[in-house]
Every structure is written in structure tokens, then in C-alpha cells.
Image (cartoon, rainbow, N blue to C red; front, side, top):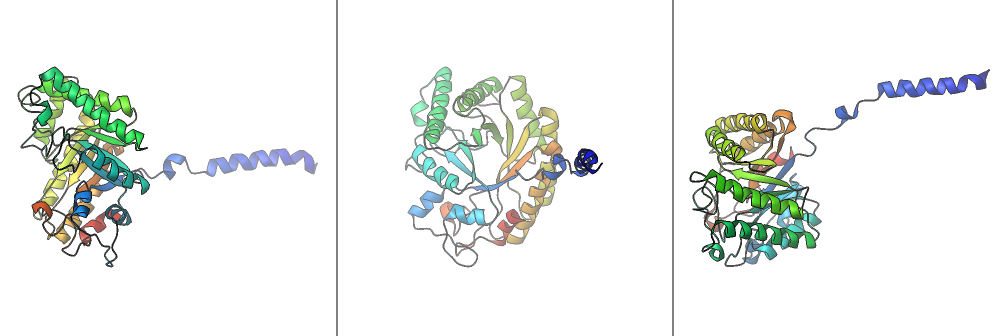
Length: 340
């Protein structure tokens, strides 16, 4: 009799255990894949100039390793076409991307499609592309994208995200790709970049990035226009640079804007640049803590992350005052928000 009941007892116990098991959806932390990091594209140039970086305890550290110790998991790197000097060209980007990979960090590649800075106030064509007609511009953009990404691939680097353009509030490669003049032209450039990215890295997510994440009118104008013209992209990227006095209202407006973008276009959103004056340490910590929390709570879990722009810049490096290191080369308390 004892042997006869053993199989039934085992089945009963197995069913009971299954009923008491917590569903896997309740085990997985919806924000466990959240991206926290920084754009550190200046780092090799800073090192070449003799700049050092130190932990809060005063120990000299490699910059990316230091940021990782503060809770960051992502590195963003800009790409210029033919810069002079060579900082941010393909070879420089590979050097930095290899460091990030060796540290186990996630990588975002940011194409400016310029020989220098591209931002809302300037989207200057690379010198070598100046005489190109529009069709030639699309080919040049695609080839530059593919060549850069192929070089990264040959080095064993797979970026998780790729930006097609940087802060393209009014398009890129002016005047041909100026969005306010021809949203269709801008869309064609975006699509040329998108297709080039997917040809090399089919799983990398393509970002369209504009600034002023608090400005819903700007975002609705841009992405309605892109959608109407058939633009292809995976993620909506934002910049957010508040002051010590308006950060709370900017964060709330940005949060609403992120939710609107998700609801309107069913796309993920990513705050790829943030910053605040380096002497506003307490306010910056509060700003970062709040915007990280808000991004984690975007509709449907579609808020991907928050990245600080060049936090390691200190002592007025290149005249930039929105870093998050003190004058001795140590991270300020502002960055502790990433470790929470």
C-alpha cells in the first residue's frame, strides 16, 4: 500500500509547489535593464592633456572605471567625420568603445554628421561633403555610418543604440536637411542612416535625438512631421539642461512629454544628455534623482535611461562648466544619484 500511494503523493507535492511559485513576471525588476551613464567623448583628449581622475577617497582611476564604480552602466560616444585634430574620429571612438566593452558597459554611438559640433544652432556639413547634391549626401551619410560601425564590429564592439544625428531640432546637414524647410529631406536622411545602421547591426536601436526635453510643442512638431513623411527610428532621444531653480518644473514637463511620445508613437524614450552647473551640487543631485525616477516610471516601462554629458569635465575644461567633478578631479555628490 505504501508503494501504491507514493506516485500520487509526489504529483500532489509537485502541483502544490507550482501553485506557490511566484510568477516570473513578478520576479523580474522592470527597471533592472535601466541605462545610467555618461557621454565621456572628451576623455582621451583630456588624458592626452595630462588630466587625471580620482575617486572620492583620492585614488587615481581610469575615468570609465570610476564612473562604473558610481553606478553607471552605459557609455555614449560621439563621432565626427573628418575632425582636426583627430579627437572623435573613427579610430578615437574605437579606443574608447573598447575600454567601455572591457568594463562590461553598454555603448551608445552618436553620429553628428559633421567635422565638429552639431547641435540646435548649427548642423554644418563635413567639408568633404559640401559640394554634394542631396542624393550624394544621402550616400555619403550612409557610407560614413556603415564604415564607422563596421570598424567597430571588426573590433568586437556592438553598440546597443546608435544616434542618427545629434540634437536635430531643425534637421541636419543644412541647408539640404533643414526640417523647417523640408521635413521630407530630413526624413530621407534619417532613413538613410537607419538603413545603414541596420545593415551592420540589425539589433541596434536607432535614436532620433532633439534637445529641450521639456518642450512638448517642439517634440510634437518634429515627430508628427517625421511620422507623416515615413521616418524610421526606434527610440526618441532627449536632452535636458535645467538650472538649479527650474529643474523641478522641467522634470515634470519632461516626464509628461516622455509619456506623450510613448502614447502617440509607441516608441521608447531615452534622456541621452543631462547637465547642470558644477557648483550646484545639491540641486543637481536632486535633479538627477528625480529625473531618473521619473524616467523609470514612463508609460509601459518605455523609459530607457538617463546619461550625463561629460561629467568628468572639471576646472573649466574647454570652457565647459556643467560637469560633475570638483576642482581636484573627484566626482561630486551630484553623481551619487546614479548609485541609488
